[in-house]
Figure 1 (cartoon, one colour):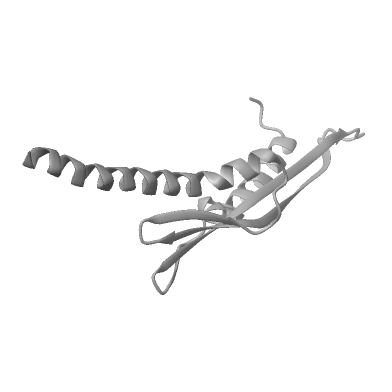
Figure 2: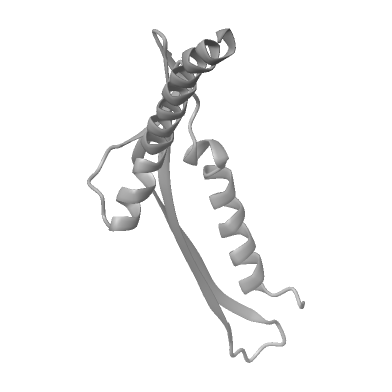
Length: 134
């Protein structure tokens, strides 16, 4: 690909944006509070633009005019809460769709299923012991 001033502007804009946002921006550093661990989760949106043009010149020198810019929005959306063996997600803002609501319910559903399976296993154990005694 031919190196042009527009390419240089785009590369510089993208590089500056990469410096500002990394993985720890989306999934934050864990915080300990008593026996609970909180992990912040954020939504990152970004956009950029650049453009330019060669300007006509009466001289042999090439003239170029252009510019670029970008923007980033970081919005906190939830916390992952870890208490012992329980993991759940607590959303900060209201659900925007049914899919968001369903995804947020998955950790709670897994916890409930685990408790149900443990309860069934503990119910079977005494019955099996009684059958063996006969």
